[in-house]
Amino acid sequence: MKSFARKSGTVILFGLLLAAFRAPSQLPDVGKAVNQAAGTVKKAVDDFFSDVKNRTIAGAGQIGQWSRDAAAAGQKMATDFASCPSPDAQRLYDDLKAKRNEAQTTRNQAAQAVADADAALAKCLRTWPDGPNGVPASPCRATYGGLPFKGIRDSAQAAVDAFNASMNALKALKCITGCNRTAGVDYPSCALAGAPGGGPVHVNVGGMTAAGAHPAPIGNSALALGNGFDVCVEWDPGAFRPVWNPGPDGVQAGVDVKFPKCKRTVHVPGTICTSWDITLILPKLKELKLVPIEVQAGDLKIELATQTFSYVTVEQAASCSQEAVLCTGISTGIIAMPPAILPVDLARSLGPLCRDRTFMGCLQPAFGLVVVNKTASVPDPSQGTVSWKGPKIKAGSLRIDLTRPEFAIACRQKGPGPNTGGAPSVTCATKHLDLPFLCLDPRWGSVVGNP
Image (cartoon, rainbow, N blue to C red; front, side, top):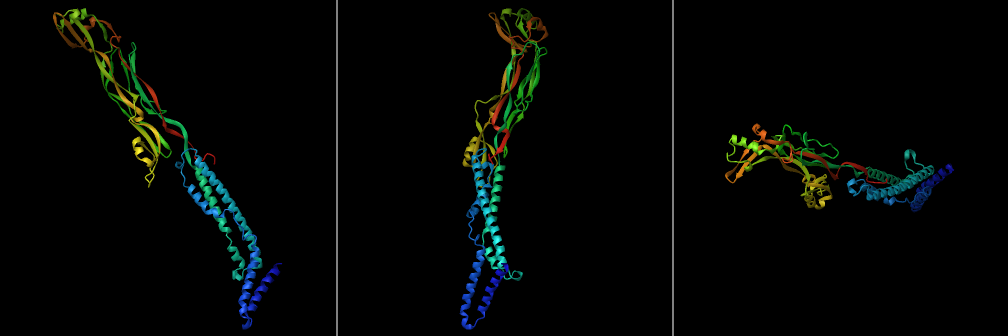
């Protein structure tokens, strides 16, 4: 069969040569004969490719659009989707997957067409082989080279690769699905309490820390009743400010603390005379010429002075003067800005430039907490007042140190009794303020919920 095919091709070529060397009177028929012979060759060659030449590859016209869709999806970021996981991201992923499957079908059909064309070329070359060293080339090659299947196969494969890359990129996008641990502030809340009878009284003031940490003491002074006690009359109130660090992985929060501390103390005697025998102290006062000689016991009055001291506590403010807003997706139209914690008025003024806004709590005062200085008074017998008033004497008064030894004989009762209020104690408890919008440990998930 092979030898017959080669002989048939040789006979046709020989006929062409004879036509070319005919007598001049027959020359007008040469062109017609050549055209007829060429048509015969083309038809014979086309017969080899008849099963594949007119084959239609499904989806070949969509390859360009597929490539553009895959490229656009590959540019998506987690911030392009409003929720986590995102239904929009899931729909986009499913759409890419469906189109990838179509592209794979197109690629497979084109690859089969290429394989069939390769087989047809091999058969054709056995009948119409190339000349020596490939010159002249077989007419089979021209027909084979005009087939589009290799280009369709390669373009469809490139679209499949682009879809796979975009789908993998979508699967890799992470977003915050929740929070394992929110921020909070531990702050001291202090109150004044009367001293228990006897024994030392301790003042412990807790510090402010980020949620989950242990509060640090900012003062610890014993108020010993027997030997007197020191009270703080001037405080450095301290300060604290929020530390908000918004970033691509969420908002980190904490508290930068300057703890309150005492700047100046005064000593108050702990043993206080709570009841005086006027008949015993009056002779001493007259002996020391501190009161007029005419003063009688009924004219005399003894009062203890008080020593005012202050202490610091932290309370929740009655109102928030400036709210804080986390502004994400900030864009000037030219460049994108990182997330920022802004006053709510500024965030509103940015309008569409601040695309996403989340209320974060109070900015002023920080976390809605304020440092409050409070005052209290304790009796101070070193600054007593002796006054007198009667029908036959001129009224008067003087300040006197009632702790002087010569007056001790006139004291009926000693100690921190109810008449004096006793030695006060400032007791502080640690309170916790949750900051639910500030996440210290975000829980991460995938934007695409079901890849």
